[in-house]
Length: 170
Figure (cartoon, rainbow, N blue to C red):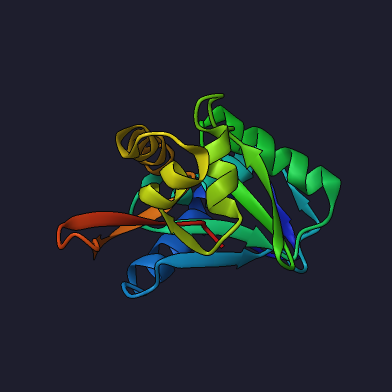
């Protein structure tokens, strides 16, 4: 992107290819924090073709979040692009994040808030804190993972079996 401006689908597709190469050349990186420092203008089309498309493409495998972003016009355009593609995106400001784009369903909102309050969590922790079944909690977290709100990895449970550890993106 030249001169801090991203405009239109054509330019977006060019920048997407460069970003995609970078991501593919970084197989060990799970979360990409995309700095918006120096970006002055982005339209919805450009946003849709670049960072939002990367996040959608790698959903469940890698996470993408935005940092160094306070301009409300940029946030609006990125949010509109993310909403159109039904992709959640987190905008981080120091240790707190704002969600733009897709939003969790009413049934998963509380689980998402729980996950955002810590670097990682297990469904069993959420179930215990809310007095619900582990199966119910697991389904909520699985939906959040499938929809791109969280990442997950396998871990050994206290019982010796396999359980998923869910991680916020950022």
